[in-house]
Length: 549
Image 1: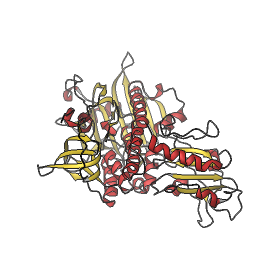
Image 2: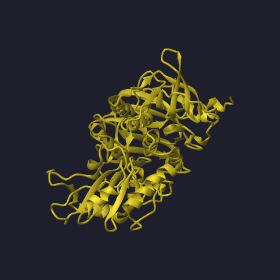
Image 3: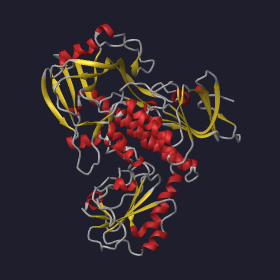
């Protein structure tokens, strides 16, 4: 048998072999845990392995975007996260000792969540407990060593916590194993990009200054040529006065930059800044005097910017840092990876259950790689030129940073547009909206409340006065779709469905008469059509899931 790099590209002769699991996930960070959560809540068995013996106590990725909170709401996790997180209300920008800008993280009122901060170890704890509740426990100290795939599945070799080896047979393999991904290397995928020459210190500390609650700080010093030669970034964390601070490394802790032959990204071992190192930079750059204390941890880290050549090959896929790495500007990395996982997981679930053909999985790369390219480019631009270099107006900039503008209109699953050009179209995020009422509930609902916990495609049908001949309409809806009916505020009192009491659904979705909307499991619109064409539209849309190229 001929093998490719690490055996990842090899194709054995097709042999009927029993699968020990449907999906094997390598890496139990936020991305791997999200993939496991979405698979398990759809009833798909999976194994989740991680080479680390325990969860790391580092506040690495701390920003939680509103779009991620919407995803967690659909999973029923939002309340748990909100109880643990801190709000991110804005950022104070200081240059050469003077405040030059104050960015307010403000979103339109119909967006259900704002920006938040949560240490990565807390994000992982919450997701780990959720996944365990669904029956999957992280196999700690277990490392993916190599794999080969064939027409029927993937055979992976694991090194277990006891030092032994185990062979696992899975239908699919998902690599969520970080910047040095074994899965990416095993597939022989390119990982083009570069590295920043600067090194940074990172620390989790308490500061006793009097800055406004919920605001981060970016304080810098510019040289005569306009370049930044000193930098301090502080992100508020849960806990009184607690911040994650990052800054340039002093010469005493610096090492020679990498030659670029290897991926250099993330925390380094062996060099641990002292509290005094962090205090020195704060004394030099902070907008207010502050004494630092109670440092939980510190490290030195490096930043690369790279993106994989493609997000998968055959039955093997990569997500998160295994697929894209970039500067931490705007807290885009972990959130983008979580959306990678959600996009892939619902498609894997349909294929595993035999409800869609394997061709559906090709849409993962087609939809997510353009997103990864945009995020890498934007974060590099913001890191080198500042957020003020962005050409977008402030409202658009905030929506983009919140990841609410991520869409797949040009992707293979986007149905034909219908209705006003500026209305939400197939591929766009399905907007949340408030003000839905029922005769029984004494309080209004949001659309997210109605969709919470649903795992499949959802058909939302809107008709101002109610659906005529609902029985005939229901007969036109294929099995497996959950149907939600929304009616106008002036519909007769006995009209079935959720009442658009404030008119927000009509304002946000802009229906063109009686209109149907398919909401995908990841919260994007899959189709939009006149209700009179329901049977044809749904038949065509569902067929496209099997015919995706």
